[in-house]
Length: 238
Image (cartoon, rainbow, N blue to C red; front, side, top):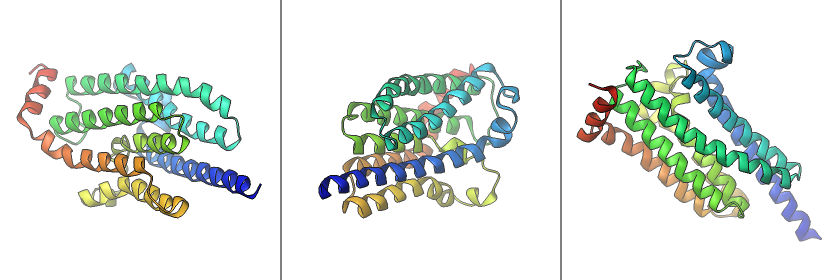
């Protein structure tokens, strides 16, 4: 009985931690897009096209879904969690498709987002690709709850760059170390939590974190690669 109670408490402790992490994700996303999207009325926000509205709605739904899924598990509604997970899988696929479509549209209209077109292209391709990999991995190991929720968190963290880049605070952009340090704090929190709760770091935490850091280091070299410049010009029709 004592072992059973300890197991339940451990599971709830996990759920509370991941709920707190998804709330922190929500903070970065909300602050980043508050001025141009959330506080601008969402439907009435002056966005470049309907596609960008769809993009914003789908990505917002993803964040809310993760919070709802964690709350369902915390409330012991595991069957509801599984049923909603089917919608989550479809939504994750839609995010990748719509994300790439929005990226192509932004390049074609020569959107001024404060960076070179090649950098925008390289960064978004890497982020969307890693998100797809981590979500597929999470779905494949969904029977392993500990691995599944870690991968879902890591997949979401891999997409936070665009939200953070829109923060209206100078300290975020004081250096690359500051910018990526904020993003990687999620990885540090997860590693520290693993040490505290499990006395070791979960293997998916290690592998997923390494993939995210590798993606961050690959952004600049990829953006300066000749073939990336040619692909960008081809998409722009130049």
